[in-house]
Length: 316
Image (cartoon, rainbow, N blue to C red):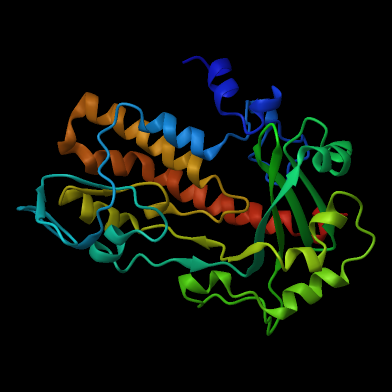
């Protein structure tokens, strides 16, 4: 599939013959439209990547053991699986990492981020959003160190699904910054968040409509933690010697804002596939060694971009 067809099939707004365009003043410098960057529809991308693959759903990993003699993966309500090689692609909350490398911990960065979603009719979208967005699929506005972002998630003949994000640096004794919250706590939204929305003044459209506190209360809003991690080189090397390789967010997670976690995870997969074709599965250690510095620099740059997005200098 050539690049033009790829973009035509997967662009978030392909239904309107859009190209998933991103504004030239995108918040994250890495999202440079001059480099061919565009926003794709996650569901359609996943479906494309699954074509021709033997994927076994509805299995939960219960326990994993690994040694130089082999790897045993115990599934819940199923028999154990023996393997010579295990590739950990299970994301930021990786069960494989927690089982085999508990020393690799997630770092929660000092930022407050809330994300919500809402559906609009096509008529509402055309009246409220298109004058500001035009062909773009993302728009943002700054108020000091507060960043408001609106993006299209789905564009259909009848409606448009919109995602919105409110983010800022954490303050001292901040009631909205809860770095130790449990995963299910993402849906527990403090009253102070709605108070901050009410304090926003002079919002133009579509921000005035989207960030209206009364309307946001009716949406499904999530409290996002900006997490990052990077496994130590020695730890990655130790696992690789046992036939275990962590890739993507399982080993070099980036914050959702300012990061390119999904892009880098897919690049890991493509590069690893090419490596295995050429060198086989007995050289995972060499692959990890060759990628480690790029993992390290990617994680560090994503944290810097997140800080730059919310800096007063950027806002001015």
